[in-house]
Length: 67
Image 1 (cartoon, rainbow, N blue to C red):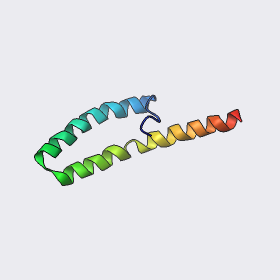
Image 2: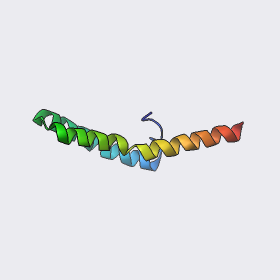
Image 3: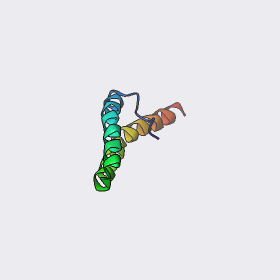
Image 4: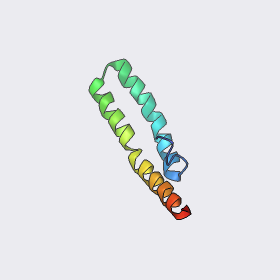
């Protein structure tokens, strides 16, 4: 699922932000900050949602126009 929208400008921007988030998740896990890591993981996943939605809609639109 994560691959949908990844090639767009927004997807590349989100990927750059994700790198720092991954490092922060590790830091929080090492520190045992479970509440903070849970919030970060949720936010991290939800930040991709608009990109997935747009990419899936574009794919569906292309499929119906090809039919």
